[in-house]
Length: 185
Length: 185
DNA sequence: GTCTATAAGATGATAGAC
DNA sequence: GTCTATCATCTTATAGAC
Image 1: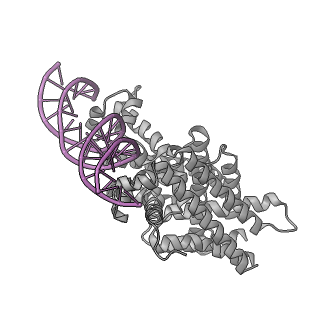
Image 2 (image 1 turned 45 degrees about the vertical axis):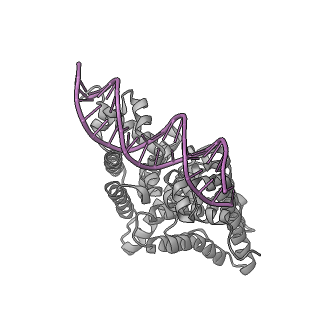
Image 3 (image 1 turned 180 degrees about the vertical axis):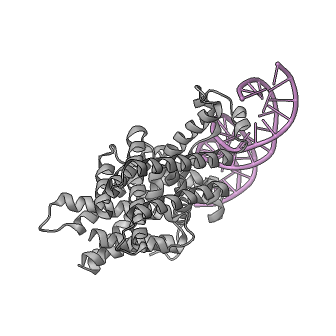
């Protein structure tokens, strides 16, 4: 129960934000050091190499998303409501901070990432697909059908976020997200 | 009718490929120079600044896509066939070269791009949306409906490409693309 | 944990010869 | 058009003092 966030936490927070807007190859240790108010050498004390920081960002993002999914499940049984809440996880980052999904951004840059970061990104998408397929599963229909609709839903949200970066507003993203829920549920 | 591609064309071809796999911030003039077999100073002769090259890539990609859309329209009247052919434009780049859509990649890095490059990326998506909405338009239904389905289709394809970067194969992308055609048509 | 100092290499770019 | 030579700057890191 620490009142003040540690330097390490502030670094992760700043770096997460910057990666979500500028990408892994679009930021440097100098950017983060400036934001946090320390020197790059101090940054290296917490995360020796850039890949260490990248991996930590992905791990924490994955964990936070997992907790959000658990919250959604505990708060409603309705599948449509669950999908709507899920879409809001994406919409909020876009509308509040103009951010892409962290792992969506890292997926674009996948070919340039250190292997440990790649592993976390892949794990994130595996988790999202599994959770969505579970939400979409129906007794009467085969499980492969739910999986396919989970893929469509996930791809639709990530792609809508991606395209929304070129939009001035979040209106189109929200419309598309609603249409996706209707389509898939 | 030139038999041999000019240096400039070879530069554009190499750079397009690299941006589609590594991103705008993931390549340097040195990379392209090595691929083409010239020095970076010669590269600067053709494209003085990196932004000039980026802009040219986006312009040509946009044009090539526009021609592909015209081909599709001339070859079939069937809306489902048109959507399938459209999806194949994306699938082919993924399966043949492991490439993302150039403008999808640039959309991720949008915040870091020179303004002229941003303009081309935005224009690309506007064009895609307009074409898809036209294909999806139906006499009985309002035009806003076709536009919304165009958004879903475009976002779904771009997002599926994005997520596919973490996959070993293209199977999931193709399945998702088929489901998208079914969904939207 | 944070700092100063430092370094090797990459990066985007220019000048001027051929 | 392409080359060599050169550039300032950025980037990722390391060493060692406080």
